[in-house]
Amino acid sequence: MDNDNSLSLRDTADGLIVRAALLTLGGLFIGGWITALAMKVAGKAIHLLVLLGAGLILTGLGTYEVKKVQRRWRRDDISNVA
Image (cartoon, rainbow, N blue to C red):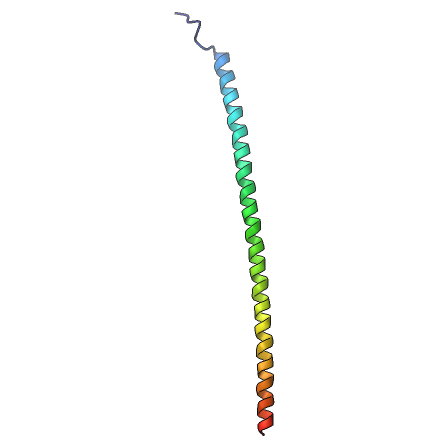
């Protein structure tokens, strides 16, 4: 009944250890790659949001200055009429 081709318990354990090590290293590599990619995307998103915020602030400041000049012109026109 003893078959010489059958795996011993030690051979099975060694195979499981090798398989577990390969899966662990592969998982760490792929997980690290996905994490790095996600961090790059998040960094670009933050840069775009900062640029958008700066653009909105500059646009608001420009609008404020234009309205201020328009109010001054309107006031000067009214004072010239009287």
